Image 1 (cartoon, helix red, strand yellow):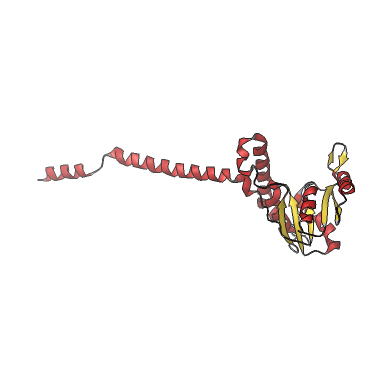
Image 2: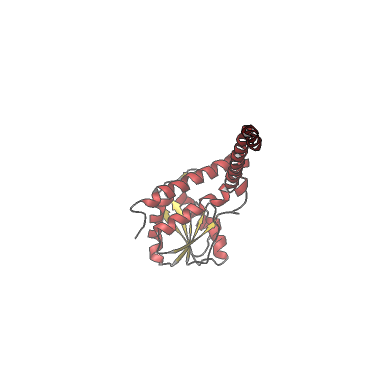
Length: 215
């Protein structure tokens, strides 16, 4: 009986709306997983920028005016001498960074420390000036000290631009303090956003320049 066979087949097929709901649930599931993954990445956006892995080296190079950290690392035996990068153009409270560095050395009188004068405002260009200060010392290994959220970018720049040295880096303060809580405060969020902008500019633009490696 053809009529009864058609009726039986019709009863076996799921309602048209069921397929539609299954598709919607699948899409919602995929979006939920993607959203959770995005939240996970955002929660780690701060700590990703931080590398704190100092190694014993021939010399410490301190960036960003983090000079007390150099004293601490030198006392802990990470290197016998330090170079304090000091910008001759950047001024704060009426004094250049170079003048403040000189006052710091005069006040604290740490052994084995000297100033490396720089004039550039970018880490990319600063690497060339650091090379000038390192050449007379002829080190094989260098320990950098930089601001927390600049450490990953800074280490990558110096390793790429000056591959003749073995590089490591120390964060200037407790590296994971507030790193994954940056989204709770506007100032922290702006710092992380700025760090990501600079890191991406280095990875997508400056890293591919023809003059990136210094000789």
